Image (cartoon, rainbow, N blue to C red; front, side, top):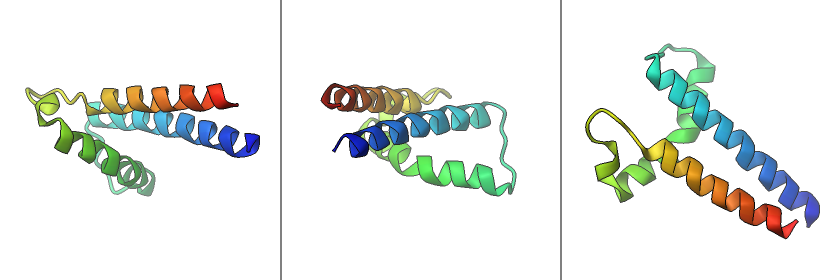
Length: 85
């Protein structure tokens, strides 16, 4: 059980890093056909779009706060899992 929890904690940490990378890509308008960039967008879009649907008011005015909400939620889950280990 400890191995599974440790794996999930590491997976959440990696996903948080990928979300931060996606934020940087969006700031510098990096929309190239690079497979790595497409992969990052494909694995982060489902959760970010779910947050957009739940909280449409968070993405108005040119600023999108959905990555911050997602990072906060992932951080909470990660801390819960760490307390179980």
